[in-house]
Length: 318
Length: 307
Image (tube, rainbow over all chains, first blue to last red; front, side, top):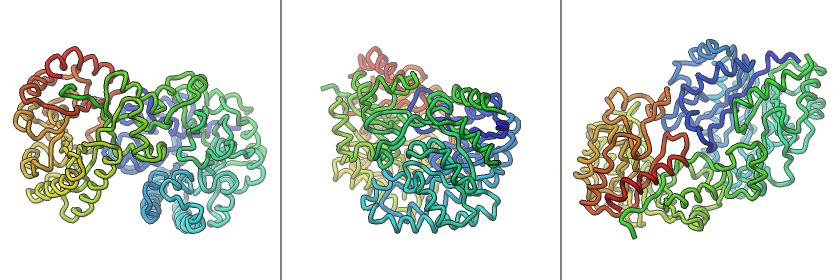
């Protein structure tokens, strides 16, 4: 495995959950100190989450949407120059989830606002020169059910609107030269192998994001999934976990934090139970040459996570 | 019963658990202090232990609190069992200056009041409109329109047992040139005022003079200190000034800034203020540490003046 091209997702910075010192993550200085440290850990490529929430309320220090980047750097090109000066050559991908917009009983609001900002994320990805936009096709099941208790009765109609929305987005992505990849979030309506059904209903340009931890939590062997669907993989997320959903956690309101037994679902890559070395070996054997991104979502120490991941990648056969 | 009861304005970011039943195991997963900031059971116990009997929530908390607890009433019960009551919720009256936004601004305000009632709260501290950047300067008509919206929300709130308190940020479109004008345009019977001690000082008001002038309008406080009073227009009217690029803090725990808070407490005594006072820790890297430092300062410096 040539690890030089592997990107690191900046989702390793905890933006949303309480912890001491979290407030610094909202200031520009934090990120500009971070970039050289990312490069020092051996990463020349990054993935950026696209989070519209930082556009609201004047918190533009978090560089995770177009408004914030424009506010601080003028435009995407200005931001890329700052990254380059810090040793980060490229933005490999952008990821987006529409959870924020599932906040009331109006599906028109969800598809309207969520669709708008997904389009923004796509255009921003193109401006940044990214290869892919990894998109969560739905909010979490429990989040939808919170505002739509009749979700099961509405599931077919919700799916139809999702397909219409993503079809339009896929056509725009193709025109912009960005690969649209579906994330198999274990908490979504299309978690696990259900992601294949959704992909079948979308244009053939739409690919699947092989996110190893999400598949593992859903009880699917990521290596077997890779073997079966390698031709449909648009990007790979090397993620780790020790957790397998015992049943209905994926349907709960906050499935990333299992209610009955607290646990850190996403572990720093290399510290969980996913055979990441085996996955990377299979990727090589199958001739996969698309984007690969490491993610330490939910890490409790981003700087330790950076080095843990570098240590893991250094152990892989060259 | 003391004249002043103390609450915390909720600046905790998302708290993912109600209560962690396997605390020790959760801790051992990575041996960091994450476990100590991950459930409301602990957060509320910290508050109760430090003598803060109230919590003022923020509207952006709802997206996490409601799925976690199921309803405002369930959260309020959970907090009450740990010795903390919900005193109210902050509200941002977005675009209340815009004539074509009247119905939407009033509707949003009334919905927020309804939510507060379900939490059992009695205060809705309300930012009268959005940031100055991109909106200001407001015309006289726009300020008048903003006042009409506040009066209308205030009427509904009053009818439901909630006091709305104007709450000005230093970077709002309502700013030093029209701050008092807005207050004067609102109905004193329906619209009150929440003094954010640091925000109005940064904006350019003199804290003690302002309180003396408007003491009969004051429903509650956001108490915090600052070392940055009287910022110029170029700062207050800039794009997104609340979170600074270089990490400079606008706000400090009481006693760590430069405001004359003992002087304020002498005025509180003079005017016999009674009610809730929320402490705010926005900008603090350690909310628990801030809470403890504040409790010490209250007990040793401020409460001996007026309690």
